[in-house]
Length: 181
View 1 (cartoon, rainbow, N blue to C red):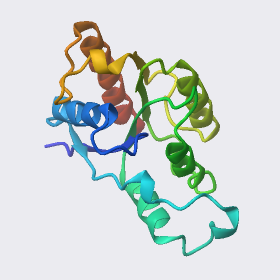
View 2 (cartoon, one colour; view 1 turned 135 degrees about the vertical axis):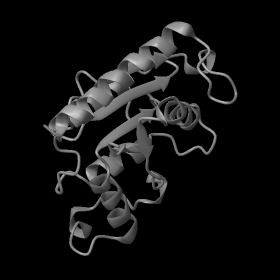
View 3 (cartoon, rainbow, N blue to C red; view 1 turned 180 degrees about the vertical axis):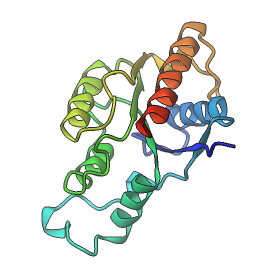
View 4 (tube, helix red, strand yellow; view 1 turned 180 degrees about the horizontal axis):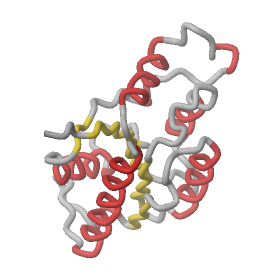
């Protein structure tokens, strides 16, 4: 039997019951037979990025976050957009990885699920390109008006969005398999 690929989900929201947390749970359920979902540390626990603190040993929350990234074969980011930009906690988390290249060439899915999302999505996509996140240009999806497309449990109720999510997940799984070659 082939071992399941390990995926680290990262939510760009720090709200406990956000649409993005619900969407991550739904995606994990949709792929549970093919992927192993790692426990994601909260990005809210990370200290503000400060290059003076980016030394060994790293602050404990940073070390735990980086370790989770290293254990993963791939990464799924589900995030809202805040004020036409990337949520500060998510950008802060990514900033802690710039010097360690933990995203470099690792297949990374970006799903922006928000009211609009296009500005934050574009900004985060550019950041992920700079840190060389793998296949991110092919593994991206925007879900505008997310609250009208999922129910209270996170189940995707919009057939077109469900199909789009399934397509990006299929491409993600393919990229995880081909990353081994």
